[in-house]
Image 1: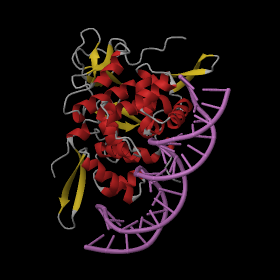
Image 2 (image 1 turned 135 degrees about the vertical axis):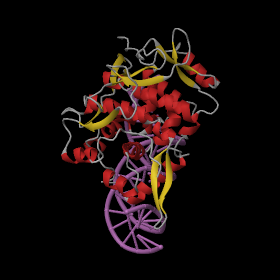
Image 3 (image 1 turned 90 degrees about the vertical axis):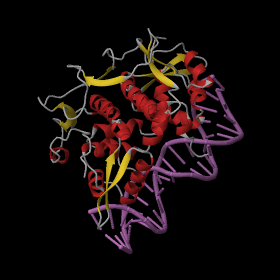
Image 4 (image 1 turned 180 degrees about the vertical axis):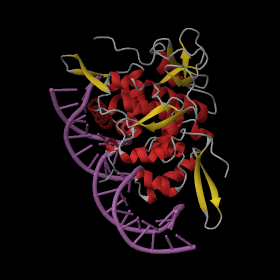
Length: 171
Length: 171
DNA sequence: CAGTATCCTGTCCGATACTG
DNA sequence: CAGTATCGGACAGGATACTG
């Protein structure tokens, strides 16, 4: 067993990672969400070897994040379009982008999220979809869900529904 | 060149990926944000080999996501605490968690985000931090920032500030 | 243009044994 | 308990050549 099966873990983060764990996958998805759909568009944009790109595209299609759609009969040509599942990854990409800009772009952002009307840069914020309250500790926490197994339940409750990131207490 | 240097790419997503690209990293961060801090806590929680855990912890400390803090003098013992940068990863983890629950948990969620007061499950939503408007296409888009190089700028403007995920047009 | 077919290398990771 | 030291296997990824 070279690699533990991420998809078998109960944690939804691990399950998600199983689909996008290879570091090309998210970059391909990023480009696909930007509107790229043809093989050579990805290739030029990413500078990726063709065999690797083919492999990753196949995996993403198999994982249900991309859809292979024929757009030309002769010669046979396929476009790779994000599925609903793939499009739902957008918030993940955007938070990741914000994080990268905040911490690893000392010279300023090279790509940023903007309001298309005003053109002004936008800071994304994660809130409760219902109350619109920012999701911060300790008002929100991770807890065992209905399908949690005993181990997961014990793991979470042992820590008393820890808020998931409260400031570390000084030791 | 066996692997392109993710950190050298202009895209903030790629830069971020460079820090958390190995699939253990996010799981370790997840546990660290849940409050785990000792070597054997991570080891038990993840079922990871000790040498790998040591390597990943070292990398995470080097990347500035974790801080190594001595909590015992004899024997010398260290705790691994998320830094501010590591804590800022929380929204990424939470959106990833929501995505995993939405798409890869057919039997229901095993771990979910809850309101600590009511105990009710919470759906996270990404909004504009200022206006609190949900970030959806085409009102928001990715655009070249102040530090964008010519290639990046061309790449983005060539598509006319594509909304980053508008529904694929039927072909 | 859109891939496929080979070959190769790096390294992530697992297993295990060992140490202060 | 908190790691380090070795060893080996699997595979992601790179380079390149080739095909309809």
